[in-house]
Amino acid sequence: MPMNAMRAWGVAGLLGSGFLGCTHAETAPATRVTTATGTVELPAPYTTDSVRQFSKVVGWPEGKAPVAEGFTVSRYATGLVSPRNLYVTPNGDVLVAEANTELRGLMKLGAKLVGYSASQRTGPSANRITLLRDADHDGVPETRTVFLSGLNQPFGMWVLGDSFYVANTDALWRYPYRPGDTAITGEGKKILELPAGGYNNHWTRNLLGNPEGTKLYVSVGSGSNVGEHGLSNEVRRANVLELNPDGSGERIYASGLRNPVGLRFAPGTRVLWTAVNERDELGDELVPDYLTHVEDGGFYGWPFSYFGAHLDPRVKEQDPERVKRALVPDVPLGSHTASLGLAFNEGTMFPERFRGGAFIGQHGSWNRSKLSGYQVVFVPFSNGQPTGAPEPFLTGFIQDVDKREVHGRPVGVTFLPDGALLVADDAGDTVWRVSR
Image (tube, rainbow, N blue to C red; front, top):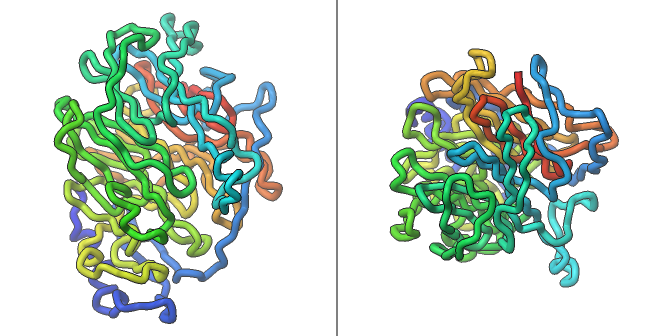
C-alpha cells in the first residue's frame, strides 16, 4: 500500500512554512507535491481567473466513433437516455443506469445554476436500469429489457447472492434477484437513507461490495463546492461509507473526498481505490482531480485543504489538526477533468502493459479556459500499485476545441468477461465497446 512517508514532503514543508495560517490576504506560493507517480505542480490559488466554458454537445454522426489506437471501437448500444453507469452481473449481463440531473424545479425557482450548459439534458431523468445481453458473444446485445424502473437517479449497482442492490441518490435499495433475470419483479426494500441534493452533479452514489461479500461501500459526494453552506449541511457527505449487506452497521470508511464516484478494489488486493472530482473556482490548474487508494479512517482534505496541507483560502473556519493528517492522493488526473468512472483491467484481451491498470472516464468540466477531460485515460499498475502518469486511451469525443463542440462525454467504464472495455457516453446516449 502506498505509504504516507512517500508524500510527507508536501505536508511537512507547508507546516514548516506556516502555510496553515494563510488567509485570503496571504497568497500561497506555487508548490510541488510528491505523489505515488511523481510530482505535481500546484500554482497558487487564483493564478488564473475562474472561468465558465460550457461544451456544446453535437452528437455522433453516422460512421463516427471515438478512437483508441490499436483497438476497434464499436457501438454496443444506442438510443439510451443518459447512460451514466455500467455494471456486469456475475452471469455476464450488462446493466446500464440511465439517469441525469433534473433542473426544471430549480429553474422555476430562479435558482443560480452553477456549471450547466444549455446543451446538457435538464429534463426528467429516465430513472431506470436497462439490461443488455449478448448471449452469442458477437459484440452486439440481442436482448434489451427494462430491468428496473421508477427509481430516483440510480447510479451504483451490485449483485450479492440472491439480492440486487441499487444506490439511488437518496437511498440504497435491495431487491430479490435470480441469475438470468431480465427484469426485477419482486418488491424492493429501502435499507439505508442517503443524503440527497447538492452542488452540480454530486447526486451519484456508487456502490461496491468487498471480495468476501461481508461489506458494502457507498460513495457520497459533497453537497457544495467547498462547504460554503456550512458543514452542518455535509453530514455523511464527501465520504465513502461502509455498511453491512442488510444496511446496518454504517460507518465512515474515509472522509474529505469531495466527490468520489469511481470505486473499485485493485486486482489481487484488498485495497480500495476511488476517482475523485476536486473543487472548482480556484483557477485553470486548481485543483487536480485524482485517483487514490482509500485508507480505512483516511482523511483527504476536503473542504479545508487539497493535496495534503494546501489550504483552500475560501474556508474561513479551518481545522488545523485534521489538515495535518490529510493524505496526498496517489495519481493526479488533471484539473477540471470531471474524472468519474473507474475500472481495472483483469482480462487478457488487451496487451500485457494494460493488464491490472486503471481506466478512468473523464466526463469533462466547465471551469477551465480550454476543454479538459472528454476522454478515457489509462493509469499503469503493477502489483496493485500505480507505476506511471495517466495517458489518453479513448479519445475523439471533442469535435472542435475552439468552438467547444463535443460529440459525447464518457462516464462509467467496465470490462466484459471477454476482456472488452465498455464506456458509457451519457451525452451521446451510447455505450461504446473497445476490443482488440
